[in-house]
Image (cartoon, rainbow, N blue to C red; front, top):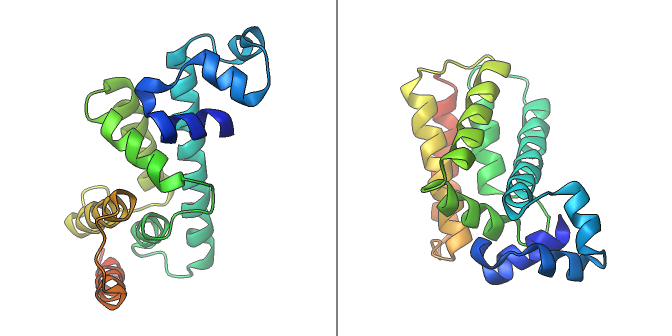
Length: 170
């Protein structure tokens, strides 16, 4: 996954090939194909890997939060605003966010994951405030992964703080 992630960041998902991943990982192409039968399977595997990293981060924030009201949206916001320590994680999420815009199978994986998380954490799926916070979290993350973030960290912190306040009314 690390080799595939490096290549995806360096060359984009279009430049990701089984040959390049096998070469970078130091394995035979046949060995890689044993785990990922096609480029598509590799892309979906990488997407699921990133989703698992994000879910782990969300779960860590949920575990630290004693207030169940809006807890998932708060955790989603924090995991989005402060991505994990995996190298280039934000850039990879950016590549997959763009890919989801025209790749229905990836979009379905994301949609099903998000809905399952809302149910798992007993949050109101129809909450307008929950959606607003998660949409804003996506924007905060997109701003960071594109490098177009606000130069004023104080403003960013204030936005995050206000969004957290909103979650208590979900």
